[in-house]
Length: 198
Image (cartoon, rainbow, N blue to C red):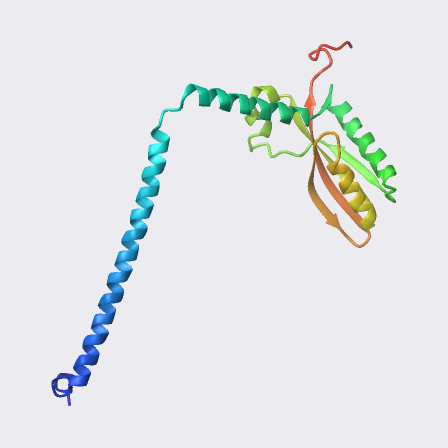
């Protein structure tokens, strides 16, 4: 017996098939409506963004933003380390870290300070800094000492409480040695340019 003859002779099969088709159509309509609502929500969101971008900014808002930017710049400058040359800055970091390591009683400690290696093809960070921060230069220090959790925690707390910002770039705790890579941002201003004597 063919499917067509089965459909003609069996009313329950016709009703079941009609219900399946109705369910599929209903599901399709609900899915279409959900997509329409999502598209309308995206459209309204984009319309709101375009309207906000098109609004002219008031001069008072620009003045407020300028003062906020100046305050943020002043705060960033206050967190810089300062010295008259890169060599003196490296010595300052070396002395400061050696004193800190003695203070926390780190065993077999060593400190190496150098300018970070830069990719010559990549634009330097200094080229993207505002004019007020053009003298800013990073120095990187690699600190190693015998692994001791209490020394590490004390050292990290001291770095966090440093008078100027110290960035912990990398921390590797191995069974014997612990290694820290730190970055110090310096304002390198020669003494003559800063108004000081020779």
